[in-house]
Image (tube, rainbow, N blue to C red):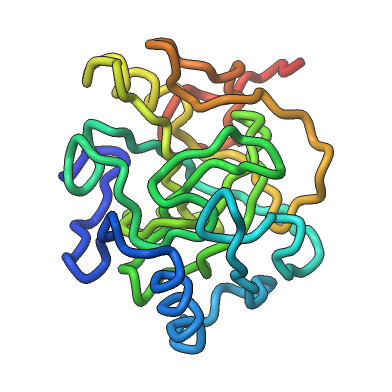
Length: 226
């Protein structure tokens, strides 16, 4: 579904996750497909995907990565109501989660989508960021975000959840986080976190958003932050 400010491109059936496939088969496909992944932007590194008992991927602390980098990004959200297909949590490149999810901690970052298709993603699956504006760690596990607008390093489309909430409530929640914000690529552990999904228990859980000057959408930056 196309959205005016934070659209996601339709995902092909080949990029959809087929539920019920044995975990061992999925891991085998991930390993075989790793060599075909396109390189990410400068600073991103290959990842090692290893099976764990709790999810499809490995502990984020074991994913290989480069040094932290501070970026300027365009952040948007997508939900259970406007995912592709709608009313689902399907993702195209699972690493830690079988479907979109996460609590926003270093160990359990929240799913984000990036521009491109499942085979042409601008950041490799498993790439992690920290988003100070929402105080969550996130991990690349989905594709279909719209291209980044001018003046930013990338576009991240963040999963907010939304099951149990109305379409109107989730749309309003997404508007609160939308804008040009700072991000840390390859973040260290221990940064401040508001634990839990963005939209949970029928409520939107985001801190006060301070957008960067010249932000492409959302509320204007607070001239006197703090």
